Amino acid sequence: NGTQHQHRLVPDQLQLCISTIRFLLVSSFIAVCLTSTYMFEEINLQNLLLSPEARLAQHNRPFVILVQLSGEFGNHLSKIAYGRAIQLWLQEEFDVPETRLVMRHQGARYVYKWQKATTDLKQCFPWTKQFNFSQGNDKAVYDDFVQQYSSNRTSKFYKLYEGVNQNMGDTQIVGDTLRKAVKQYEKVKLESPEPFILYVNQFLHSNHFLMDRYYNEFRKIFQMSTKCCPTFSSKIPDATRESVMHVRNYLEEMPRRKGPRAGPYQEANSETVAKILFKDLVPGKDKVVIVGPTTPGRFRGNSTGAYNVLEAHKEALQNQGIETRIFTGLNDMEDFCFLIRTKQDLVGLETSTFMYWAAMLGQSRHARLYTIEGEKHEAATKTWANPNLLGRVQFESIYQSNQ
Image (cartoon, rainbow, N blue to C red; front, top):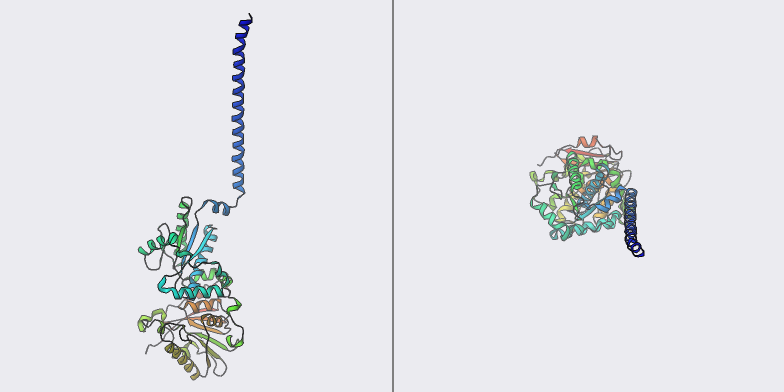
């Protein structure tokens, strides 16, 4: 009997061991599941606590606004402003909070222009010090894209990184283009760490809507350093009596733009200056200061010929009884400071981005941007919403005989 009892005990012990193992396995499995569930819930909770901007930054490829710079100081201001306006528009209208402004300078052929322009910007406009103006020239990141854009180029068109082409000169088309860009970005933002690029190669002064909408922002970011604007009296126009005229002198810089070929680059001759642009001045009371290329070497072309233009304007005004002087600034920044400090009328060619930005950032009673037999910008003048533009910045189209 003892032997039979011992034999029965073995299966009972084995069954107990098996049951114990089963219990331990099930318990372990339940513990793992509960722990995993808790961890999953905890992770989800952490994600919910992140702001949309933080989640976007964690997961999405960067949205780059690549600004193609060109020309000199005024052109650089105009293109940087356009890029900044697009950046703000994307944030406000399309809920794209994280974008990067990247600057791309011109090539070796224009090295003097862009180096001088970027030096002036960084010295005189503190906000621009944040930019590496060669970042957009990084061959590994941007060259393939820009070459692809250039090979399929249509004049004054943008090409988005994913292949969308649209002309961005008109407000409606700008909005449509950005809408397409954001839609494409949403499709591909998780696919690659490579930047999604919106290529900007446009001047802000061609879009009055953007200037009107973001004018306060431009005045803030383009505040000039006091180091660039001397305060002694000879560098400041008479606040009560002196109107100021800017002469861009395209004719000397670009001789090919003569006669009918001048188009929007045609400037007022001396007769037009004296008898049309300043016809309302009072002889013996009002005065005019002419600002333009006076120092040899500052401008391409014939510096002597450029200065002769200023002298001819001065003589024509004096023949009308208007006391006139020529401002002899030492460099472009001195000229610009003088223009923006004008309190009376500031007059100059609309096509000049240098003059355009002096008008926008300045303090003049009236800023009058003229074109010769050009299209009047009446709609833009009437639709300014910003009070510092409405009634102050005016566009004039004038007739001039070429005889």
